[in-house]
Amino acid sequence: MRKFSGFTLIEILITIIVIGIAAAALLNVFGSMIRGSADPIIQQQATTIAEAYMEEVMLKAFDDPALPETGSDEGEGTDRSIYNDVQDYNSLATTEVRRQDNTAIGALSAFAVTVTVGGAMLNGTVPAMRININVTHAAISGVTLTAYRTDY
Image (cartoon, rainbow, N blue to C red; front, side, top):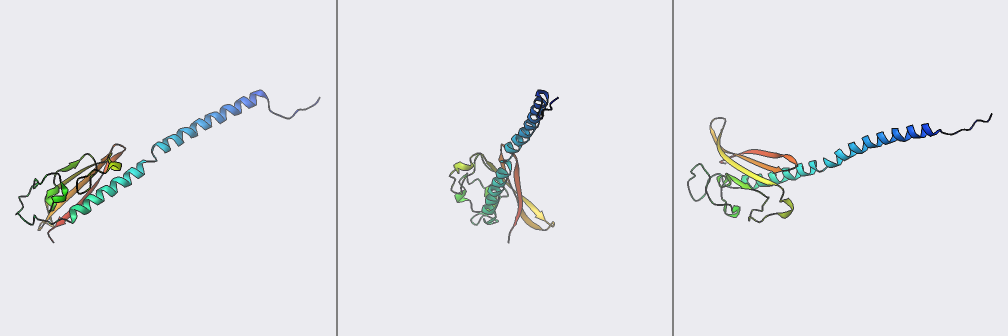
């Protein structure tokens, strides 16, 4: 009797089935990784946008140089180029990222920015403004930066 080396049909079918199941599981894992791969980039973009808005606000005067502050939004409109103090940014909400001259940045149109400014006291004695900047995008939960601006 002669012995043949090789695989039987049943062994080949079982091997194909096992490899198919393993490949399906790996493709599922790779698919979920690819779907979430853009989230860190979007998170970083949102953080950078919030930092840019925060820097803009923090560079403004604590009080309106021309008028005494009323403690609320100055009502100078949505044109940030004429904002001259921190409180002017209160209640600023945009559905897309804009430059300081109010022109939209098309590549960042999926982000929305909200700025709120309110009075605060540091150590119970130092008057300050609490600045909250929230940047949102459909793919992430959002980024919020908070800072305090004092009259220095």
